[in-house]
Length: 524
Image (cartoon, rainbow, N blue to C red):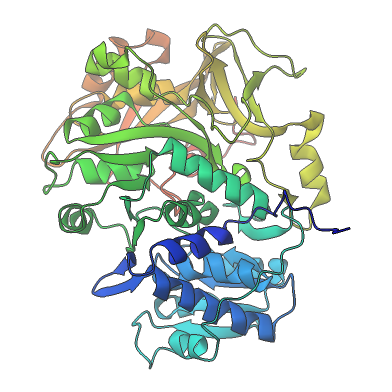
């Protein structure tokens, strides 16, 4: 009697490429400047890389990539797991010390690195290195590495879909970065969730504005391939180049944090597109003002929410019937919420300290918790941190939110960012949205500053649109007309730019620490 289960195969996103290469062998799969690879060529390049890795490394070994959004990193998302190894895609904007720590902690056997990033390996130790010139020519060491592999289809060695497919390191703003482990099963289901929620199909032309190193590009390397779409690579975010590619390549989809979206919407080349482009927005809650500005140029935003520990997005703010009949501002306020779990996820909850659901009144705040297919396997080599994150059988996000009557959640803050003023909780996100609704404001970040009477008060750090002016008094008065007076900023500081992480998130701790210098605690 056969032992193999005819009705089951282990889920892995590597299978998406095998299918698309079989169905669309001559269809363009990858665009990178003047280079074009068909799905047949894409598949052969992946098999070459995978076969050589399997020949030289052992099953389960970690393989690191330190590259921007180029074909080599896209190929790694399929080749490394196909070889039986684990992918470690490293943030290209880290310091050399942080890169060295990640390589050491992950135990990576080899690192493939872009030529422009060689300096980041100064503290990488004696690890094997493969240089990527990103030319596509035979003189490129990466291409030489591929040439020693076989283009013949490689048979998978996956035995259990819960095996680790990749390790993604957190930003480490509160200590050493933690290695978040993804599984083949989770990556497969998250990718399909993205295909569904982002509305991708065989005509998808996806622009790589989101770093592939960030949560494995929110699993879009696998998702776009599952849809048989075209990957348009981009080494760095350049709004001018993005607008050129919108027009030249017929882009249908892209992803980006609000700061990326702001640069696109406000660029001098910005114009209303003939055909709608779908963008997936996450990383920080987009303001209604940003959502309105995107819609005005025919970019349709899908607001999603998640963390590194949830493969990137785990919820989507799906538009409901009747929303299109609302005013632009009313609709934008609804779309700016975080929504509910993906079709491949479970419903996320908002709970109090005893893990009880908070009332669905849109006012009572609690912590967002989640579980299921789209939650990480755990932290690599850190059982204590894994246990703490999974207490009570749910993953604890650390995000403070309210639960609305329609079931949608709305993030009000990170727990550490909530301002407690005179006993009242103030959401920095709510204040930021009020500030950026001023026509002269480009971006804003709000943090708590010490106040002798109230303990803490909000302060807004503001960048202005090119050629626009505003005063502190104007901004504060504008906010008082939109939110409760006690929530309005006590002070406004105009800056050239806000401190940000490599993925576009504002580093509020940098602003906060400056304001609390000389005090023992960052609370009052």
